Image 1 (tube, rainbow, N blue to C red):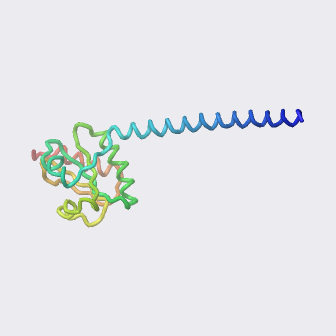
Image 2: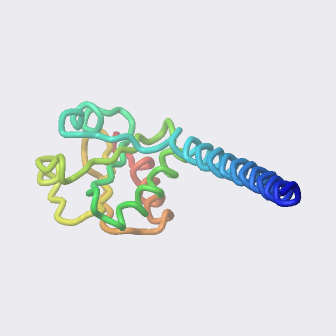
Image 3: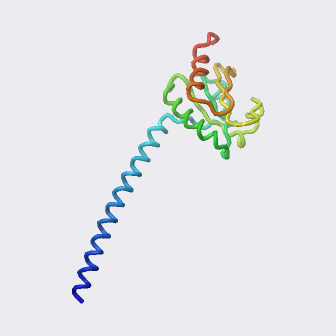
Length: 153
């Protein structure tokens, strides 16, 4: 009987070691994921709604980028990542926002948004550029640079 107990005791220790290794790996993964999301969320685009539209976009002294999206749109998720990167790259020079076109339909209709994703760039309350669909980051950056360097104040 003692012989069998020792085998089970050995197996028990092995599984405890295995559980500890799994727990350490899980913690490493979670800490990486948390740090990854925190670093991107520091400069992530903020939500704008119909209620905050005028103050955040139209009355902004800083040029503004707005991505119109819907929750069910797959390509919008790819554009979100690009816009979040741009928000970090242009922090202090450009305000970046997201507007859910399903939730704030009057704003989307005002700017004739028929499909998503659409990115609009504003300066001094005027729409200056529009980009429809999913494009490479460089495409958005060149539009941003045109708006930032435009002569009209």
